[in-house]
Length: 518
Ligand code: MSP
Picture 1 (cartoon, rainbow, N blue to C red):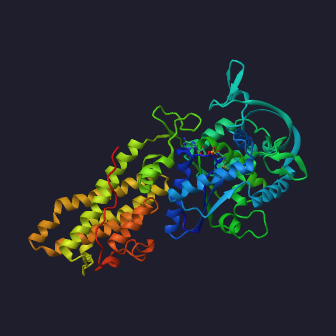
Picture 2: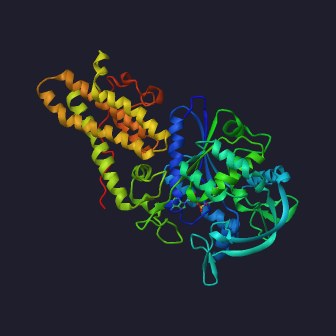
Picture 3: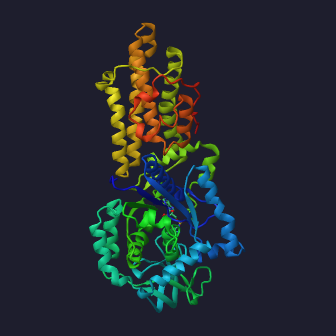
C-alpha cells in the first residue's frame, strides 16, 4: 500500500436479509473485517461498512410468503445478520440499511443528479427475481416452455415503462477505465472476463426503475416508478458516508480526499454490477473513483457446486458458532478459502486445520514457553545486554523477516499464504525447543544460552500474535493476558522492539486452544 495513503474505506456487499444467513454470506464480511483490522493496526484511518439490501421484488416475494408487510419482515430478520457478525467478532463502523430514511432521501437526490443521463422508455426484458438481474437471450436456459437463469431460477418476461440510464454512452469510457487501471479488480482475470463478455459491443442502456413495484424508493416526481434495487443498493457505499448531503465529513474523509483507497469485497457473480455499472455511475456523478474491487470465488460443496440456501447445500455458520471457537472459524476461512478461486469448505476440514495449527502448533508453543519461563526464569522474561547477540541468530532473523513476508503476501491478497508464513515461524520455534532442549541447558547450568532462547521464543510469540491479531481476535487478547503483553508491547510501531519485553513478569499458563473432535 502506498505510503501517501492514510484513509482506507472497506465495504462488503449489502446482503438481502435472510432468516438464516449462510456461509456464502460470511466470507466477504470476514475478509473485509480482517483487511480493516490489518490497516487499522498499521496506523491507517479506516472505516468499515456492511449492511442489508432490503428493497425489490425478491424481498417482497419473501415477505408475502410469510404474510408480512415487507418493512415488518425485514425489521424482523435483519438482526440475524447483526447477531452473526457479533458472534464472529466482525467489527464494523456502520451497519447501513437501504430502508433507512437517510438512504432513501439520498438515493432520490442522486437520481436527480443523474437526470441528464436518464430518459423514459419501454423495457422489454427477461428478468430473474432471485438474482434481481436482467438476462439477455444468449444467457437464458430454455427447458420445455420455461426459461431459467444460470442458477436455475425462473425467468419472467417483462414489458413495462421504465426510466433508462444511458450506459451505452459510457462503453468506451468504461473499457478504457478498466484497461488503464491495472489493479482495479482482483483477481485480474475477472477484469478480462468482464471486458470480453460484456464490453465487446456497445453496452445496452440500463432499465433503472420498476413500474408497479411499490417496494422500493420512489422516483422523485414520478411515484408510479421505484428505483431498480441494484441502483438503490450500489448507492449504499456513498450514501452511508453522507453523500450527497452538505454535511458529508465522512464522505470527504473516506471517499473524495486524495489519500483514500476504497476496498470493496464481493463474490464473483456480482462483479458485473460493481466493475461496470458502479464506476460509470460514479463517473456520471463526477466523483472520484478510488475503488479496488476484490471479487473472490465461491464457497463450493464437495461437488464443486456453489453453496446456496436454495440448493440446500450451504453450511449454517450459526451452528458453527455454537460449538466451534470463533478463532477457529476465522482462521480456517482466512487460511483455506482463496480470494482468487472457488474453494471447498467443510466442518471436518475446519476442525483438522484448527487442531493441526492452533492446538498442536501455536497453542502448544505458548504453553511450552510460558511453563519454561516459570520453571527456569522465576516467571520473568529474560533480558540480554548485548544486542549484538541477536544479529546473526538464524531464528531471530527468521522472526523479523516473517513480518515483511506476511505483509508482502497480504498486500498481494494472498491471505492464506501470509498466514502460512506465520505458521512456518511457529514450526521453527517448536523445532528450536526440540533441538536446544532448554531443560537440558538448565540442568547443565548453561543459563546464558537458555535465557537467550527463551527471550527469542517469547519475542516470536509476540510477533506471531501481532501478525495474526486481525484473524485470531480472541487468542490475541488471551495471549496478551497470559504473557503480560501490554498495549505498548504489541503496538505495531514497536513490533521490532524486543527490548519492551525484557524482565516482564508473565502470568500463569492457560490453555489457549482446546482440541476439538470430529
Ligand atoms: N444484495 C446483493 C448485493 C448488493 S451490493 C451493492 C446480493 N446479495 S446476496 O445476499 O444475494 O449476496 C451477497 C453476497 O454473498 C454476494 O457477494 C454473493 O455473491 C455472496 N455469496 C452468496 N453465496 C456465496 C458462496 N457460496 N460463496 C461465496 N460467496 C457467495 O447479491
